[in-house]
Every structure is written in C-alpha cells, then in structure tokens.
Image 1: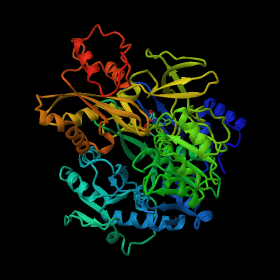
Image 2 (image 1 turned 135 degrees about the horizontal axis):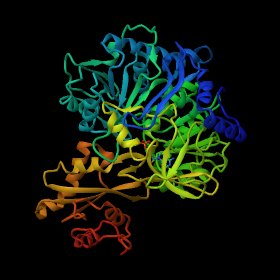
Image 3 (image 1 turned 90 degrees about the horizontal axis):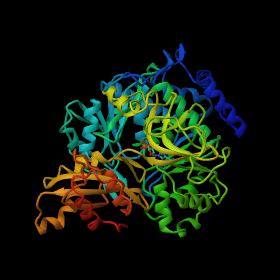
Image 4 (image 1 turned 120 degrees about the horizontal axis):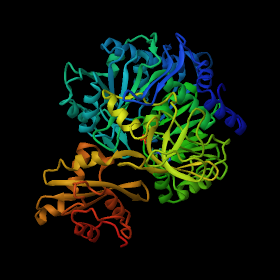
Length: 640
Ligand code: PRX
C-alpha cells in the first residue's frame, strides 16, 4: 500500500524527514491522489498575529475528495464491500454496499441535491441516525461542493437549532426517527421544533427509517425516496480548491456556545487517509470497525473518509453496546470477523463492569488491532482490553487527537511502535508537539509535564471557526505566541513517550463526549428557579468524567426541593441533550467567589474529587464559610 510505514526504522526515518522537510514529505504523499489541477505551492502558513491561523496546503490545487474515494479506487475495488451496515436490531438484515453501489447512491443523491438547488458552498445540516444514508448524504455534499455540518442525533432541538443558525444552513437532512437499543427516537419532531427558529432553512429532506408518522410541512419537507426516484447515477464531481471548506463540525470549548470547526478539502483528505492506514496498519482484506457515531469527528475521519479513501471495508453500527445484551460488540466482531476494532475507553469500562461472561463465548480470534480514542484510558481498562479482548496478541493504538486536528496526532503505529499502557506514545510523521509551562516556556527533554501545543501546521488542522475567525485565533493561537494550543496537559516520559493527562481548561470529556462547563451552566440557568450555577468534572468510574453541578436557587419550598434536581436535568436535556445531564446536583446557598466575583472552580473541582484536604490558597475568598457548607452537603464523600 502506498505511503505506508512498515517498521520502526521506517517510522523514525519518515518522522525525521517530515520535520526536516515538511513540504517535501507531504508533497510526496499528495502525489498519489487524483488532482484536477496540481498545486502551485505545498504550504503557506502563519501561526502568529491576529489573522492566525492562516494556513494553506497544496495552494491552488483542484480536486474532489469523492473522486479520490471512488474514481481513484474504482478499477480495483468496484465489487469490494465499502460499507457494512449492522442494524440496531440483530434480527434485521445487514446491508453491504460495494464501492460501485455506494458510488451510484452518492451520485444519485448528489443529483437530487443539485435539483433542489443546493450549490457549492451552501451549508447542509445533517441530523440522521447511524444509517448508510448518513454516509451517502455527507459524500453527496462533498461531491457537489456543499459543506456538510453533521449534528449528532442525540442533541436536542435547541442545540440543533443553534448549530443550524450559526452555519446558516439552507437545508436539513433528517429521518422520521432512529433506533437505539429499545428506544425509537422521533428525529423529525426534533427537527420540526428546531426549524421553528431557523429562518435560513428552505428545505428538509426526510428519510424513512422507523416508519413512524411524521408531521409534514408542504413546501418545506420532501421525502428522500421521492427526490432520488428516477435520478441519474452519472455525476461529475465539482472541482474544489484545496482550501475550499469540506465540512463544519461543532465542538465545545471553555466559553460560550459550541464553535463550528472548519476543515478544508485537500489537507483533510490526505491527513485522514495517511493517519488511518499508518496507525491501524490496515491491509487489503481486513475488516475494520469503528464504533463511534458519525456525528462526532471520529466517525467523520475513521468511519467514512479515512477508511474509504484507503479502499477499506468499514462497518457502521446503528446500535448500542449493551442491547440486546452486553455481548453485542463481540457478536458483531464474531459475525464479520473484524480485524480492526476502534472504540472509546468509556465503552470498555462499561463492558468490564458487565463481567467477562459476555466475552468468553465469542470467537474473537479475527482481531488483530485494537484502538482507543476520546479520553485518557486508565491502566486497568487498557489491561482488560489488551488481555481479555486482544488475548495479549493485539497491539492497542491509543490515539490522541481532537475535532480540531482532523485526524490522529499522537499514537502508536499498530505492531510497529512498542506500546505502554495509557500512553499515546509518539507523534505521527508531520506532527511537531511541544510541551510548555504556563508562561509558554518550552519544556525540553524527557520526564517533563506541561501544556501540550503543536508548533508546526499539519494538513488536517482546522482552518477557522465558522463565521468568526477571531474566535479561532483567541481560542487556539493567543495563549502562546506561534503555537496551537490543544487544551490538554501531557507528560513526556523518560522514553520520550507522551501520556495525555486531560483537559486543562473548562472542557470535560464525559463518556468520550466533549462538553463545555459553561454550556451546561447556561442550560441550567434557564430553569426559572435557578439563580446561578457552577459546573465541574469529577472522576467517574465508567464515564471517565461525570458532571457535577453546584446550583444556587431562589427560595425553594419543600415540594420544590424534592423535584428540583430532576427539573434541572430536564432543562439541560432540553437545551443540550441527554449527554450533558449532570450526574450530581448540589443545591448550595453560595459559591466560592473571589472578591472580584470570580468563581474559584479549583475549589469546586477538589470537592467534587472528594479531597478537600488541600484546597490551596483560599485567602482571596469573599466568604470562606461557603466552602465548609459545600463540603458538608457534598454529593460525594469528602476528605477534609
Ligand atoms: O482531551 C483530549 C481527549 O479528547 C479531546 C478532544 O475531544 P474531541 O474534539 O471531541 O475529539 C475526540 C475524538 C478525537 C482531547 O482534547 N482525547 C482524545 N483522544 C484521547 C484523549 N485523551 C487522552 N487520550 C486519548 N487517546
């Protein structure tokens, strides 16, 4: 396979080359793609100044990512399966789409979108369950140069509306509903509610999945099956500039509403494929399964784009790990003889808690490589994954990356880089991490711990935050001059291996989902009885981090007191979705604030962690008594 590293010496050599001559390194990789017009210059970049990031890869190149998935692979892979779809209910038949069949569906839907008036550069919001049409919809957008903005179908109407409004989407693609375990979720109702507040949306395309009755708005709603009827399967790909936007994906930060991370076309394409084939060491004939939802970046890069560009067979799973029983993942591995399995630590921990009996009666001998992503993996979970699932013969790739990075940044290459539990190990070729102290001084050498930044551009990096470039600069490039700030703390150990410690900002990873504490606070504060709230993460055995909310309410009667916690959870559910519901809610009379009115979150975090023995300097607190009151009423046992 082209551009694939095969041994440790090869990795070291490629890494060296990628730092010594980044442009030459990436240009060589880019040569293997189908370009309508070749680039004039490999890279133009600026990480400093308010226009930063100003990063252009493969300047003036013209291409289309779907030509590189389909046309480029068609002569050898027309009849090879591209996507296997495993439904929520194991009794329902699976769907297998070959590259040829998927290509036809993409072209047909692309033609239907064109007929609806969707043009290059238009934003298309996609709010679909994990069905094959989700991949078809995103690829059809890419085919015609429309910008997809996929919203995870677990978000509420209000969260969906926020994203549609920010992207000024012209059209929404959704379904009547979706299945997850025993639940059937009525997505169309959620979209209807959202669209009441989204003036930019002219049309919604509705796919039939659950066959539930839907409310229909004539003139706005059209059925997926009707618009593709009779539509041709020939379609020429739109010429895209290397830097034209491929997609927007909203993600949470420490302040304000989620921001639309913008990825452009050529750089993302090259990075997604390069990282996929090298990290997973995928070979022809392998069976790859990533359990993520396409609504998150992992699904974008490692269910759809990376695997399909490589010409892999990628499994898409509609269901949940614990239904009909906790052996569901291993049933699927056994059924399709999965060779590569990629999931999140939270899923691993949830399955550990169910006991090994769900694993032992499955044949997992097809597995060759295991992957993890989304949050730090604790050593116990790593060992169970390695020993019980991988039978101590499958390397684990602990892949560190972010929505903003587009693809994997620090990770072992499977079977090549020696692994170490809970360590993401070494940067991929082309990635130049650096650790700094809070003043921005570089921490050189090994055995150091600091703030993880990246000092040189890579092709898959975000280009801006949609509609607000200044926000992109402020969030990622203003803390330390000339460096991309990841928001994570990391250690570089005595061997030079990276271990990600976790977020250093007000972002928490709950079950591998990224949630901003400010967003949750905003949602809680919508409850009419709430005066103020402060949200922190706390260690949670399964989810990695749980959400702990300290809430000040107006006077509550005993009756109100009995129901307030559930009402607050419902409010968060309404404004964001179930993933952001606080695990613990403590009603307090005050919050620990400095004299200037700033909440000392450090104290709240410590209490949430159950350790108030060393709260640090509390001399600037306006009312130190508040801390004792919070400790006494804490929802966890607190060591004083
Ligand atoms: O804190 C890091 C954590 O997830 C954050 C990025 O979240 P998101 O943009 O939603 O993307 C998740 C999927 C790529 C990071 O800032 N994270 C991701 N992978 C790891 C990780 N933490 C530790 N180890 C990892 N392998």
